[in-house]
Length: 119
Image (tube, rainbow, N blue to C red; front, side, top):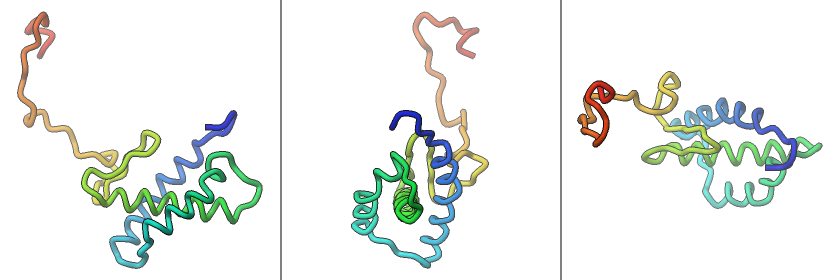
């Protein structure tokens, strides 16, 4: 990460763009290839990382990143990038992760932990 560059805008915009690209991919309206996305990110990734005064390269690099994350989100387990997770088919209310179900996890006694604290 470069000095002073705030990636908040990038991450907030990805939060909007990745689900849109997931919908486009699932509907079959776009079909980017991994090699196309890799070339675009390889050529323009530094523009996303360090910024640019020109908008064209930023848009192309951003869309390549968003499409790549959308493709990865469609894989089992989804994708995590800079602390954000996207899983195709997950609802936004769950934060892209399934809700926690305590019934699925057995209680395991921990040595040295009293029964009152373990509840």
